[in-house]
Image (cartoon, helix red, strand yellow):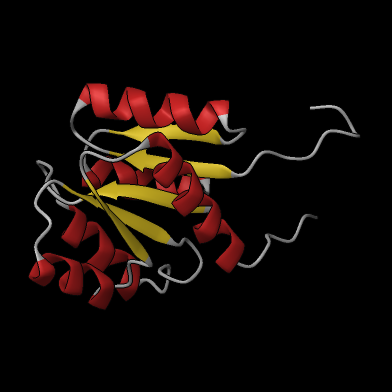
Length: 135
C-alpha cells in the first residue's frame, strides 16, 4: 500500500460451505475490502485477535461452533460493538433472527442473496462502526 492509497477495510467471512466463502470473499475483494475466511466458529474466534476485522459476515449453521456460539462469545468479551456482524441464514426464521440480534448481530441476510445486497449491507455495517485509530 502506498502513502496516497487508502487502507482497505478488513472483513472476516465465516462459513463452512467452500463455494459460499469463495463467492463472498471474491465479491468483497472486488468491492475493495481486505478479507480473511474461516470455515467454523472456533477458527473465527481465533482470527479475531490476529486479523482484527472491522466487520464480520457470519453463517449461523456451522460445525464445531455455530454462529450463535460465536455471537455469544463476542458479546461476553465486549466485542459485539467493536466488530459489527451480519449473520447469514439459510432458513429465514424470525426466532433465529431475533436470537442473533439479541446476541449482538447488527444485521442479517438470508441465503441465497444478491451480490449488491451483500456489498450494500457490509458497507452499512462499516458506516455504523467507529473508525479504528491508527498509531
